[in-house]
Image (cartoon, rainbow, N blue to C red; front, side):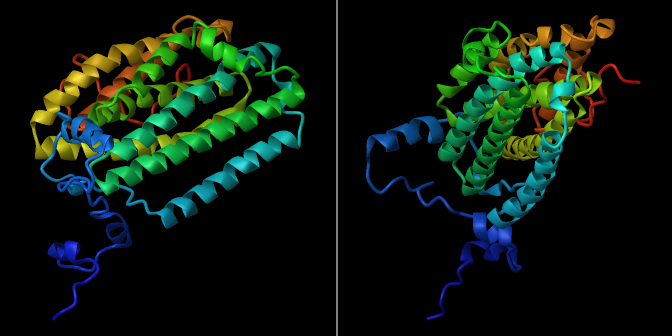
Length: 345
């Protein structure tokens, strides 16, 4: 009897499988056959995974564009961490934080501490998507995304502690601001709604195709530009490093959605329906932060946030087009992901 190769399920490719293929293909044994024991958990999966209108003939067709494995992920993030560590160390070795204006410290106190609560919510939803995903490759991508979000939470917390050393009392009211400050309430509502969205397809769409891309660009890009313009150039560089993760999150999400639409064209309408539901919620969340942009740089106060908002919406529309979803945001033009700084020549 000829022994079965360990990668028998990949023999149809007629080549030696890659490390990514070996470590990611056909990992979930229960898909297509169900769980061995019919517990309440099985009913949950039947309803919110198998019963999702976001469907595909074979979810194993999905492939992470970056072909991320545990080894490649840890090597890549190690180099990213060295870079961010260098930025943080340069702050600690100087009087950088004491040189920031009091007006900007006030904006950071309102923005930086509460942001980690929002990012933690994004991390929890990414974990849920990974848990409920109908393919091991989707699970792997979602779990690495969750790890990236935890990294972002840690860096925000560390930066907050640095500012506390130079400005005693900084960030101590972060939780109260997250729960009560008007600028955060639309986003808090969006996060809480998302945390109780159980259909895995809707959860994926709401997080990775709508809310998260808008929030990532608002803070990692446009708030970073604002920081640069007021002299906090190292915060912009930290945010640019974190935005590197966000670009991959968008990339794998667009690849998954476009594959699903090609396989099952009805997914176009399904995703459009969810985008139509979640976009107004995400839009309100983004618009709530206008005061953070308009309370500084008086000479540029008029129109700065409006310009950023327009770029965020146009960028989202471009991302949805690349995801294979047509006319999700009618009347919005496509812009390149490399968005130019608002207010710069």
